[in-house]
Structure formats: C-alpha cells, structure tokens
Length: 337
Ligand code: NAD
Ligand code: WQD
Image (cartoon, rainbow, N blue to C red):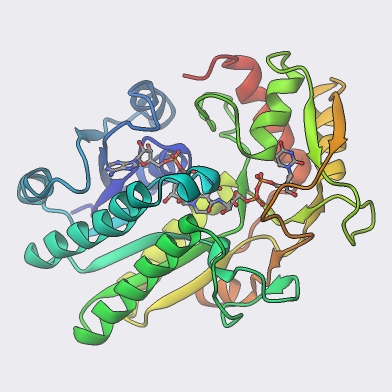
C-alpha cells in the first residue's frame, strides 16, 4: 500500500512543488488548503504534471470537523504542514491573525493528529527563527531569537512540537528551516503566485522583467558586503521539495526529532541575482537603489552540512536555473494562475 500524506497548504508555492514530487515517488496525497493565498487552478497543474489525481479538501487547519473527517476518510500516515501566513510586514501589523493562524492552527492540527493516532509531521519552519546572532553562517545550534512576529510564530510551533515529542516519544517530527526559496517547476506550469505587490525579491524582479512593474527598488547598497547589497541563501523550490521527501523517508526509519537548515550554503547579493535574471531572461531589469528596508540583515546563509548528513540530501540547482525557471513560469503565466 502506498503511504498517504496529508499536505496542509498544498496548493501554495512550496506545497505544490512538494506534492508533485510526492506523487512521482508514489505517495498518495491529500491536500488541505483554505485557498487564502492560493488558487484552485494549482490542482489542475499538479494533475497535468504528475498525470495523477490528487484529493483536495478545501478547508482550514483550525476547523476540527474538517480535520477529523479528513483523517477518518483517508487513512493518513503522515502530515507535511505548510499551511500558514508568511508576510513579515503584515505579521507586525496583524499579530493576532498570525498567532491564530500559524500557532493556534498548528496546535489544533497536532491535537487532531494525536486523537487520530497520526504522529509523523514535517513542519515548515524558517531561517527567520535565528534573528540576528552577529555572524552570517547559521548552524542549527545558532541561537534563536526572531525579530518579528512571523518568526516568533515559527519558533513557537517548533517549541510546541519539541514539547510534544518530549511528552510522547512515539511522535516523529522534522522541523525544516528554509532559507530563501525561489524558482519554479521546470515546465513553467507551476511557480510562486504572490497576490498584489510582491514582498520578496525574485517575484518582484520577474514582474519587472515581464513589464508588469516599472522598476525594482534595491534596499540599500551600503551594507558590509562586496557590492554593498544584501546577501541571502537562495534555494530552488525543487531542491526544497526534495528535502521534504528525504525528511519523510528518514522519519519512516528513525524517531529522533530533526531540526535542519535547508539551504545551499552559498549566498548571493541582490545585484548578483539581478544580473543572473538578466542573463536568463535576456531582459534588462530596471532598478534604483533606495534606503535599507527595516529589519534586513547584510548577509545570512545556511550551514547545510547537518541536513546533508542526516537526510543524504543536497541542494543541486544554482542561481542560473533558479532564474531560468522563474522566467519560464513568469512568461507563461504573466498574471499568475
Ligand atoms: P504560500 O502562501 O504559497 O502557501 C501556504 C498555503 O497555506 C497557501 O496555499 C494558503 O492558502 C494556505 N493556508 C494558509 N493558512 C491556512 C489555514 N489556516 N488553513 C488552511 N490553509 C491555509 O506559502 P509558501 O511560500 O508555500 O510557504 C509554505 C510554508 O513555508 C509556510 O508555512 C511558510 O511560512 C513557510 N516558509 C516559507 C518561506 C518562503 O520564503 N516562501 C520561507 C520559510 C518558510
Ligand atoms: C531578499 C533580499 C532585500 C525586495 C524573507 C522573509 C523570511 C523568509 C524568506 C519566510 C534582501 C532585497 C527585496 C525588494 C530588495 N520567508 N530586496 N528589493 O527578507 O531575506 O526573507 O523571505 O519564512 O522570513 O523575511 O527575502 O526576498 O524579501 O529579500 O532589494 O523589492 O532582497 O533587502 O537583501 P528576506 P526577500
């Protein structure tokens, strides 16, 4: 029998790429998503790319009835939990909405999992949990001290899952701290679909390239980095998805709680990303240097060696592929899904 995975947030950006890989690896998949930041059209793309049907439940992780019915109907073995809100700026102005959705939602999900005796979870955490430790290469034991509400919701859920595991050793959990996910499916059929003005660099760059936005604002060129712009560890969403499958496999065979960085370990600056995108697209990216964005650090990136060792996984795709795939997605879908 194929193992059955519930993917919360499975129509979202990272979730959708992970679902396609799960189906290719012969997992059965049920997606639970309330579509607050994604589109039903994603389901058609998943079926097109995988050649398989995927079960979809439109619902909220905070709805116990929906969870109970889904667990009863589908015989779920494990959960990959992507569902959550992720805009740092919005989290500062709407903290209660973030604590309710991300923290309360996760507590309800875990409670219902426990009741249904489903005790394997892979959780989407974030490098945002680290805050500003005063150096730029982060290992998993780098002190955690998030500087925004969004980051605190991620750390709280990490702690909740750790406490749960301490109380009941039969839980199996992976807390995956992503760095900067970018890129799209190589087909150009699936990618990141931000609503409104993108908060993140690469979707904004792609929209400038395709003519949807006039120019990019580069937030500061006076950082202590070689070209003065901020450096980040961009990781291709397909590599990230593969990391989830690897984590699930490891959890099938051992019961240690895993806390792992998922990054490439190779940071790039804003200007390097702009130039890579110009090369991939053949388009000039209009930009101007503006003031620093509050809360930004000069540079941070993963030490990915623990994930490599524990998961037998390593990011494979570099920034050229990240930009080529983003461009293909943006060109094919100038208005998103
Ligand atoms: P996304 O917004 O594309 O996907 C999240 C999905 O969850 C969306 O489809 C949304 O509709 C759904 N959702 C939100 N709240 C829900 C709820 N209460 N019930 C049911 N569904 C709900 O985001 P993404 O980029 O794919 O991120 C996935 C996860 O990874 C999130 O938890 C995010 O915080 C985390 N993460 C993202 C990044 C990033 O830069 N993209 C980095 C680190 C961590
Ligand atoms: C990257 C670089 C900006 C936009 C965020 C979240 C983090 C995680 C990933 C979820 C920085 C610069 C950006 C623009 C710019 N998400 N930039 N002009 O801030 O590293 O991380 O997404 O967990 O929690 O904070 O990503 O893409 O916003 O910025 O110059 O219009 O691009 O200053 O150096 P960030 P980003």
